[in-house]
Length: 137
Image 1 (spheres, rainbow, N blue to C red):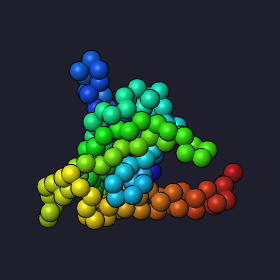
Image 2 (cartoon, rainbow, N blue to C red):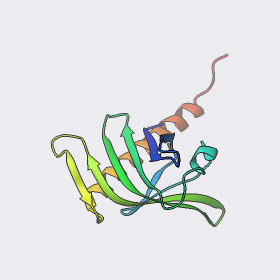
Image 3 (cartoon, one colour):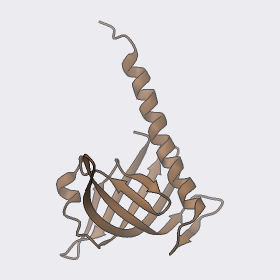
């Protein structure tokens, strides 16, 4: 695992909910997508149209907070995906901490999300190399 990701929202009872969503990826510069394979029961409780926040943290301590609208789950070819339309991105990392996107897509947001995606894929490659090593008995 190259990064940790969590989605949060205010439940119907007014209590904040926090669900791990490690499988979340940037679909493009305006949308996040994730499958409900891990923590599916909890993720399916999020009502469509709910304002959510997604926090992404790499193992290199780079992070980004994304706020947007959850659009629900839809079937795309052979997989069901949940999507979040990005409305606002906050970067807490120096030297340029602060809101980097508010109300429109911005290349910096896509770059930060690409870093999170790259960290995930690098970690998967290192895991694959370890799996190919002969096992000692």
